[in-house]
Every structure is written in C-alpha cells, then in structure tokens.
Amino acid sequence: MSNPIPDHPSLKRVKDNFGDRRLRATEFRGQASLIVEPQDAHEILRFLRDDPECDYKLLSDVAGADYLDYPAATPGRFGVIWILRSLTNNLLLLVKTYLDPSIDTSGTEPDPSLEVDSVCDLWEGAEWREREVYDMFGIQFRNHPDLRRILTWKDFPAHPLRKDYPLRGRGERENYTVVNRDDA
Image (tube, rainbow, N blue to C red; front, side, top):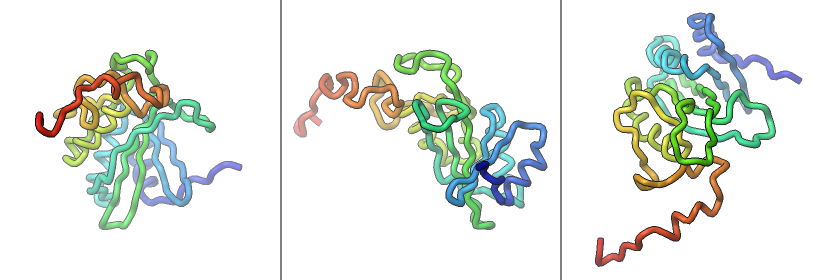
C-alpha cells in the first residue's frame, strides 16, 4: 500500500515555487515531512520562512539521525531534520535532507560529503542546535558562525550518536582527568 501525498498547505506552495527541484513528501501519524536535496535545503527553508502564506518564523529544532541498518530504505545514511512552526497558521512541518558518507564513518577525520548549509542566517536559534548535530553526528554546516563541539570536549575523537560508534566508547571515559572539587 502506498502512502498518499500529505494534504498540507505549505507543500503545495513549495511545489508551485520549486517545481524544477527534486522534492518528496511523506506523512507519518498525521505529521507531514518535506524531503529536499541537500543543495536546495537552504533556499527552500528561506522560502518557508519568508513566504507570507507559509510564515514559518519559528525553528523549533534541528536534529540529526543515523539510519545505519534501518529496516526501511532511506535515501541516505544520515538525515538532517529542521522542525518548523508557523504560529500564524498553526502549522508544523518537518523538512528533511539525507547525506551519504564518502569515507568510513568509524574514523575521526571529517567527511566532506556530510555537509549542508547552515540556517543560522535565517534563524539565529539554529546556532547551538547545529553545533549539537555536528558534535553528535559529524555533519558539517557550511557558513556556521562558530561550528565547534558543544556536548563533548574539544578533542573528543569521534561522534557518539553514530551507530557505528561503540556503545561503551573507545576508552574516553577511562582516560579522562578527574577534577576534584578543590581543584576546580
């Protein structure tokens, strides 16, 4: 059984304005998602924010996902999800893009194919959320004003929410320096 195209007013607006782009839409439990190509994400997100009929002025969250060994087929291993809210229209929309790594993700070097444009120029609140996705999944955000780790320390050797990262870590917890209350 195929899923019907979601009945969401913003999807029609995006299709009318970006008909030449590769767009997909899905719905799960009544929640519509717009799937865009990584190179189109910033432009479409800007449209959703600036178009008066869409008016997604609130970026609720930026999330990452690792679909390694996911039971259903996905267009890429990693997903970046922007959760948008239009307060004037009382609408919620998820905008997703997928990225595939070009090198082994169990290593520590950055992967140039895991990169998408930052939306900090559209929503200032995206800064820390993008840093969290970078820290946990290793996804780079082009033109981010301060892309550095936010949840792990500066020299942490990996990205711990990747599914190929060992559950017990790689010895990071055993090798850290204990700071006593008197030393802090």
